[in-house]
Image (cartoon, rainbow, N blue to C red; front, side):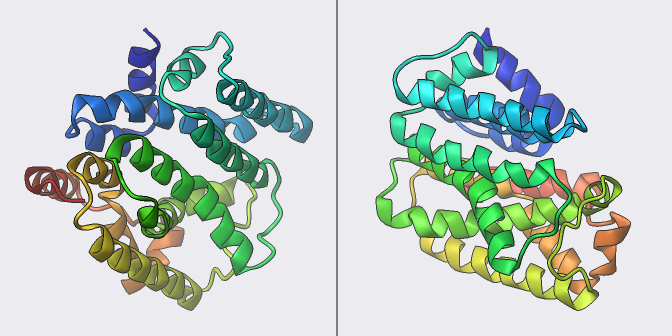
Length: 256
């Protein structure tokens, strides 16, 4: 039941990744639903309380759970149960860095500089995607840099869509929140995605299915680049029809 619980959680809380996974082979879903459910639980941890110490404790709980998985042990929790069946020790270590990066969400401080922002996006979006690709896709180690670059673009797109919500919570989500700063960030993320996609076009079909989880990123980044004011207004979404059509076309071609 833990796998089914993970799938249900992703369907409710992360519908874009859920939609992409439903076009993937069952073997890919078996790995990715626990991973994405874990990501949801960790991303929620800093927001369920206004007490930083409690939020820190919640994140530490997940770090301890990953350490136990890496040692071949586990704890009773429906997401942890499913996660323990798909992670190897390396993946547990990589995901620990993802949880550590989420400490930024506990507080409302601005990122120190663009390098700190880039590190946050890479450690959250990039490492999640790399872990999923590595566990599913039979990829060479040489693809890691390109998967992380692709994940950076996906992460920036997701971050830009979340800007209104982050600001409502009192966060300072961007190093440069001016229209030109948003335009530059979106352009850089688009460039990373373009180069990564070119280098990753020959990866295995399971790897492409995992990478398809970023199916909305390009449209989001183009909208932010062309009219950066849409970010603050929360107007980056395409129409439901355009989203559905794009995913259908990518799935039919086995693309991402």
